[in-house]
Amino acid sequence: MSISTSGDRFAAFRHRSYALFFSSRFLAAFAIQIVSVSVGWQMYEVTRNTLYLGLIGLVQFLPALLLILVTGSVADRYNRRVIVSACMVLAAISAAALLGLTLAGAFEPLPVFIILVLFGIERAFMGPAVQSLAPNLVPEKDLANAIAWNSSSWQMASIIGPVAGGLLYGLGASVAYSVALAMFVIGALLVSIIPKPAQRTSSKATSWTEILAGFSFISREKVVLGAISLDLFAVLLGGAVALMPVFATDVLALGPLGLGLLRSAPGVGAIIVAIWLAFRPIQHNAGIAMFVGVALFGLGTAVFGLSQTPWISIAALAVMGASDMISVYVRETLIALWTPDEVRGRVNAVNSVFIGASNELGEFRAGTMAHVIGAVPAVVIGGFGTLAVAVIWSLGFPQLRKIDSLQAPDRTER
Image 1 (cartoon, helix red, strand yellow):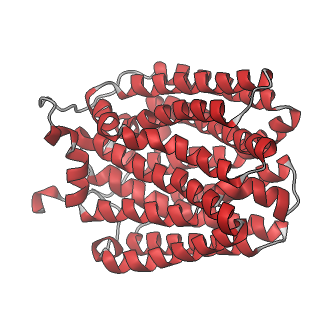
Image 2 (cartoon, helix red, strand yellow):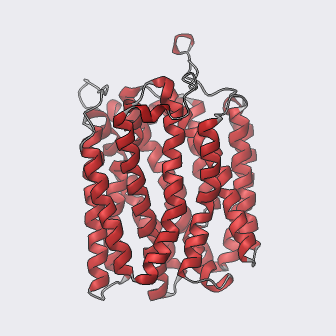
């Protein structure tokens, strides 16, 4: 069945549970952006060391990797709504700890990294649960619309959050962490009042076969494998977020507000495309659109790395966000539609690790390369590497490239 059959541009919001979910996810994403901007700027301000900026990403990724065999199974066996709410509470505790360090004048790498590990644990359980919860809140005919608005929620937070984070940090790091703390608490409350949704759970006894079901499904389903791994290597190479404090300070001579503008620029491009996709979903050549989006992301990364002019850098980042939104939309829709609900948590656990590897390990890659060869070469080389990935994957996964419309596969013929 086609994913766009309802024809209602706001179809997902006709369902109260989804509206609560959307609001909660937006607040959590907004808070994450504020914390991310504040921690990155504060860490660079304290240490002046790009390696620490890379380690910020690494310590948040490791829990997702180490817990991958647990998080997906938890999302498939237990109430996803409760899991999401509990994760937001843990995020609130982590934000409170950062606030405490700041107020005590004890913001140092080691205690901050310990707190970020807690953030990583929260995100490790949050990712599979939140990605698996949305399909339980709307009927399949409204799923593409929900996915588009889900992406819009994150991207709207990515636009407003970094700017707000920069402004709040200008008032004081404690102000920024306090606002993030409040948003996490409200988000947890909103999720907690969502009525328990229908959810298929596995009745089989826990075994290694059950635990590894997500890996098994992805390895068999070449379309899903290609989509997930494409994002992994593209963003792993093309990620430049960790180095934005360096560009804002040393390359473009901008302050905290300028850093907020740089961090929000990809969100501006992404939200424009996300809204467009919510109103005009991709009907044909979806696979090609995803590969084109990845290639443009790489090109935008290279231009950003080479630019020494603020408006060109901001424009390049906006192009990166817009093109990334295309690939994210296609990838997330394919994963949601091609994955049976009873293994969705475990598949999304693997997907979350891949996303974490691309984002957090991408930040670590950028930080360590910048420490060795400088920030500008690290970003430019990564951008051209992403272009190469788009070409290689388009040749290596022809099934993915040939996908025309975004629709659920007919499993009776497979």
